Amino acid sequence: MSARDLAVAITIAVAVLILLAMLFAWRRRLRRDAVYTAPLGVPEHAEVTSRHEVLYVSTTRHDAPLERLAIKPLAYRARGELAVTDRGAALCLDGSPTVFFATDNIEAVDRATVTIDRVVEPGGLVRIAWRVDADTIVDSYLRAVSGNPDTLISELQRLTPAPDTGAMS
Image (cartoon, rainbow, N blue to C red; front, side, top):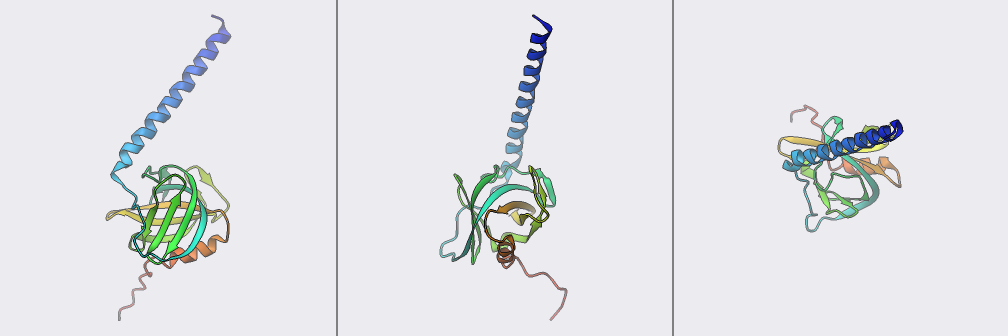
């Protein structure tokens, strides 16, 4: 076996080891995050007020945009539509069941620039902070495909709780 053949064999072996490590890490992440479930299905009689074509980018721990969570069906990037309703927001991703962010579970909506696997122009992502359970807030990131992201953000912010001003009546 020549030195060149040995070098090729070592390179292939290292590449296979790296791919296996990535596979095992992703499977471990899927098991770790299996305790969380995204709310599926749209409530009956929810009135759609607007629809927006979006790219779903990721879901991460709250205020930790580089720590991806693999919450099914939000584990992978996808193209889809966000329907804003009078009861919350329905995220319909291609090939996945509809995820519904109820008004009671949406904590905040704002702009973001960075999340795992994606860096865009300043404020180019829409971040929805929502409760996956009573004790856990997560952030889901969307990118508006068409239209003005400010319109989408403004419509989603109407679904969030009013800020506490500290005023007593």
